[in-house]
Length: 323
Image 1 (cartoon, helix red, strand yellow):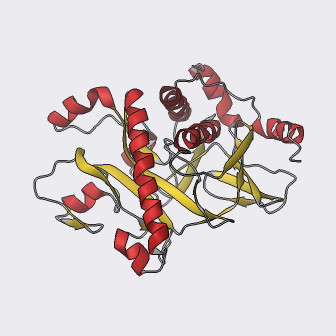
Image 2 (image 1 turned 135 degrees about the vertical axis):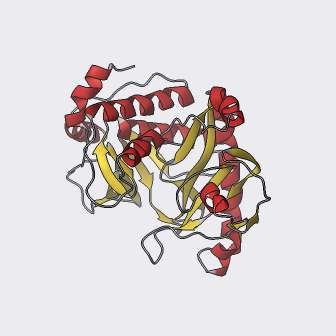
């Protein structure tokens, strides 16, 4: 593991943005992407960390972890459904085939938990028993496992700019997807989640819930895109403390980026107003957690890429003949 002192030194060098000599640059909260010829795209996963729909900071090696961990999961699930990954010419870079994103975020949940407005436990705690088209009995406890994982789709952004809840039936009824494609997506999502839970369990983690993104490739096939089972897109708990904490009525021991949200919430910040300053120790701890999760899930030692990243990117992309 990289020393905390080294991580602290890397914070000012963390990759905030890229400027590559390629056309069509676009940026999301975490990724920059560029158009390439022949229906391909170059995606750079930066070190930006977002929560509450805001970019809060840059965390050293976070982008590398997300990029390499997603690639690992793409390999573990390619027998279930094809994905968009073609190659990785740099630890922070994926070259993918372009796919038209499906306008539905596919959330799979294995437990009833969460405090955001779209979370199962939040809706349940308000007294709702019909949630996302599913009927829930009285008497459920926070953080309990569901009998079977379920899909709770949302729109991507929606008319309000925020994700809007959907039932599985509404995906087709509202014309977001045809029935055949939606059935394929649901089947794949549940199978990928099951695979994820199995591999997470072997690593001493519980995959609680996650978000998948799918796209339609140029040949009309459905492919898995974006990221898979990362600390950004998924909720993980530590398996060895779950049962005791659940029995005691305590929250599960989270092992993803939730502790960052908790730190901000502790300062009264939930996405509105000025972003409060946080200590460098928080970002070093976040980096440690991302790297640890990568090593636990993959069973591989994390090999840090050279910093500063921009120079390394350019050099590697030149070697690969991309630029």
